[in-house]
Image (cartoon, rainbow, N blue to C red):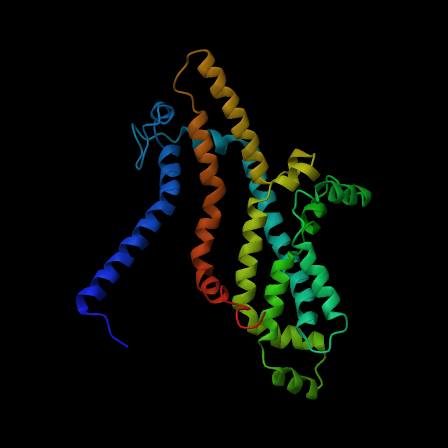
Length: 294
């Protein structure tokens, strides 16, 4: 096999580096623009003069308006509650579904596997009316429990975690059984401690989904005190847009509507962006889970 020359190797390395820098720039630009727009002069934002960096005198008026709103803090508290407990419910159900399916000799494996796989072909929109009727029939409308148990597990993650468990050596399970451990003990004391990367990765996916979730909260929750942050921000953005249209109709400039929008986006994104670097090492390791066996 011919080895590439030094110049060709340098050329391809430079090309790859340039491509990576370009992709990073394309992905980072929306974040940079949003942050810059949120602290720019409102007039500059309305005139679309903000590109990369803040324009005009720095203005934190949008953040001041947002932080003065008590519903923002209430929405934060609700979102943290739904994210922490909802992700816990997701992981518990996913583990309890995936582990039995990964063990040899589990009766009904094929039927349950097909049943779970079929649910992947049903969209959330298609389930909206049946799910609403089920939640209403259980008297869970306008309760926090409805948000926690709806979509308690995603079939794709169950299959992913099942494949990860199947990669563990069967001899380890046989040795534990010979020592008198039952399946529940094996799961708690052996399988879960060895599955940190997989659980962290799946937990991150579930956590982001819970954090960004607002659609089902709008469907199931009428009480504003139970609304998550995303619903609160959506309502504020709608109100800000209405104010902006009114200002435009009255030929009034300098509206804070635009900076409120971008400030709301930053507030909704910042916590996840801060947490992600701390679990990135688990994410990189867990991204390949289940890649050996199907």
